[in-house]
Image (cartoon, rainbow, N blue to C red; front, side, top):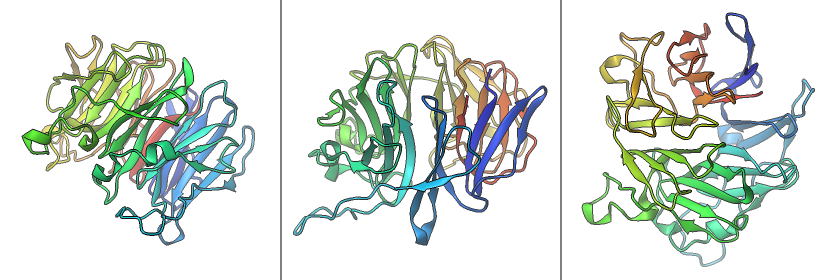
Length: 362
């Protein structure tokens, strides 16, 4: 049973504590500040919060297990662009979009996905960071472009629990990349994906794919689910191939969560389309498959079904280690939880700022 959860919002980091009938939402850490990403590192109990402070830049804070206080640590720093470079990208940190823990045999190792598309690694719990040059220097990077933001960004980092040197990242818009040597070399892994926003002759080009979010099943690590700009895809072979999945209402959306032990079970939050980023029929719903995408249940009980215009960002749907407890939060500040795999939902009972990310902390 999950006992704590975290919501990164436009106006602070909210901590939630489970009680008998629901969740208690405490006053926020960093009140008024946009929190772009949050990570609870289950290896040592440390919590990390990334702030996006506009004029003051991106910041990173760490809270050690058992502590009530936060310590500011280093934020990733891009190296200077080489003189005479024709790269049009501004080599400076715009935002920390996601944080991920290294493997269980890598104490202190963290990964950070950023805008404008750089992957960073820390070996000392965020005290220092180094750009992963193997990915930054791939020949396809000039093809990457912004999807929603003006610049490309890395939002999904999936470390393989069987091998800490094997990790997969997803870029909007820049495709899916796999490294098996800790980040030194990278391979595009988009076979089967298609980008409907591109001309037909370019639709299957790997470096222009826009995977909105990719998640890995911890118990079946070869199974990956992708909510793509142009649909839903699933891989059973660690992204060697992808297969498109049909779903009710709409296959457009941002969020996806996978059951931690059962790769056949995944959840999605559909919106109408890119041009209409609101729920179908103004009624919030969650699509759940329990058979690998062959069939879906559309789950609505407890979710608003009239005049609802909530959009769920890519990191704002989370499932706990029990595979039954879920959190769902929206850009309109709505928040809901389920204790039975999404069959029934309850309101968190708090008026929240727009939510960027949700994560369980135990």
